[in-house]
Length: 214
Image 1: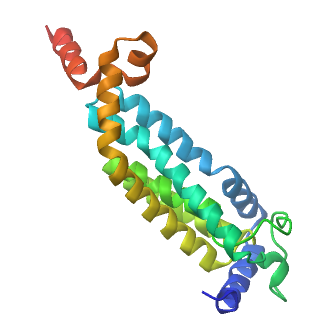
Image 2: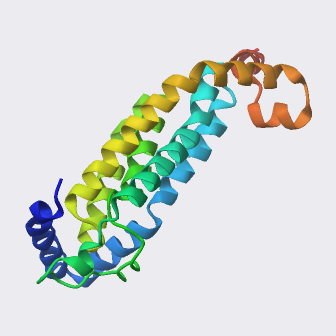
């Protein structure tokens, strides 16, 4: 998509951002920089919870951040090939960005933040489908915030979300079986660190719960 086709929407969104109260602007600035940490917390809690689940569940929990990392690499490669200038420098008549405009060479298309958010949202939802109600809105909010603060075109974040989601889904599908086999091997190794990292598994968890009932 040509940047000129979404430049008017970019101007509308950045004008809207400047019309917002200062506290809304500050929240957007914080979220657009630190919001990805929420996905990091979800990765960790998902892994910790999956330690007491079966091999497949733990494999999916471990694959979630790995698939997200793959998506980031793909986004970064595409960004280096397109070399699209940031709208905060290129769009004439647009309101000033709420955060500093990234330097020349830190290209705009696609949005890495959006790719990471889209990938994390999908990978976490695959691992724990009930989380989709949380991860998908968070990813959309991250994508919108990148335009809101003025550092990306709308098409940058749309493609970033789609790229991240697709790459993450494919990565999980391709790596699931070997990851599950690896989890089974690690759990059966008996090494203290491996046992701590992989957890007791579903069978041990059920046995412990039955022991407590008796």
